[in-house]
Length: 532
Image 1 (cartoon, helix red, strand yellow):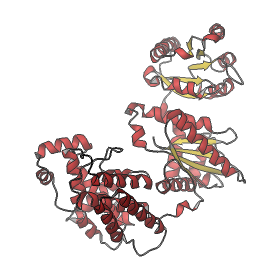
Image 2 (image 1 turned 60 degrees about the vertical axis):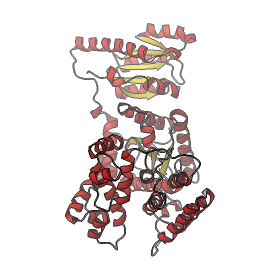
Image 3 (image 1 turned 90 degrees about the vertical axis):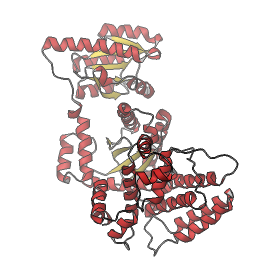
Image 4 (image 1 turned 30 degrees about the vertical axis):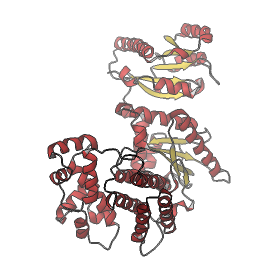
């Protein structure tokens, strides 16, 4: 399909967001090449991207829609214009039609169906003009777009695939907007990404990225040169030139707060933010990226929705030198609280354990592993009939602890799980065979375990268990068991007192070469390299 370039121009951010999210533009033959909040900005953008269609508001600051049409007709010959207006601005719409606009849209009456119909009419006119002039190639290729090239430049740069001098040279060729002067890297991470992602079917994930990108572009003051890079659907990089001063850091902090609020208002999502220190030039970009990423990793300790600055003491978790954590002692205290069947005592015991972990500056890995051990105590030691799922998560407690984004979340998960298991005033819901099988895997991964042995333990036909397990868990029994074993092996490898062959045995592999092969396939490196 021949693809045409489109600009949306309106001084109302919500209107622009509403229009761009109303239809699948590429299915209609249009590629959204940019947005502007006034006619002057749109004219500059039109000079660079040469759009085929501009959908523009009439009343805007600096330059209105009518003046934009007059000026743009000289800059982009052959471009089509569609006018946005309210009922009381209809006289302006008529003037715009006289100037050459092909159609108009009443703002409070725009529907997806009406917009699709309008686009089809515009597309047919553009195709007819191209055919008469002998042009048959697509008007734009996304893979060749400037934004795509810039995005790949920065990704290769921060990953180390490009040498510094080559990267700086390419940035000049692509007219990167940030100067090689003092700058910061700010990394935004979408909180609870999997939950947000479920609201978007796969084809709409591009819309999620595009909406976030546009809010970022919109919110940054013009006094800061900037580049915005989509690292993934959950992670976004903002690279800004800045000048070191007493107020600079507070301005950056306020900017991040404003962006967080805009994301909450417009998209109902929250972001955590990691901010690098100031670096002297683009040559130090990788350093700034690592700092921003490291700052963001401390989200685990300080919770989601935080703005984390690299220079703060928040980066020091897990650095304390110690001989070892008294984990068994703490687990014993938890068992005693659990056996009391008193929620208050249970909450106090778990809170005291958390204080001890804070005092010992335990690492994220140590904390996750320890809380998984607490969940295992709940389900195996005197509470084997506890077959509940947590109401606020769709996964088993083990899986929820592994994937939780913050310590607060892990703490709540285990506490809620324990409370449900000691409760006697309401019946516990039944669990599926897949859940029961997953539970046995988490408890017995170090033993000789198979689909048949697990099926026998829960009194179900192995073939049926295989089918329902794949349906509910999204992977087959062996794949799930292997993933659990390798995740456990990664944790044990942190402790250097075990030989790697011993680690293999601890997670259920008696054949060390086979363990090493499976580990490398899933992790991307050998157990020796991972430990190193």
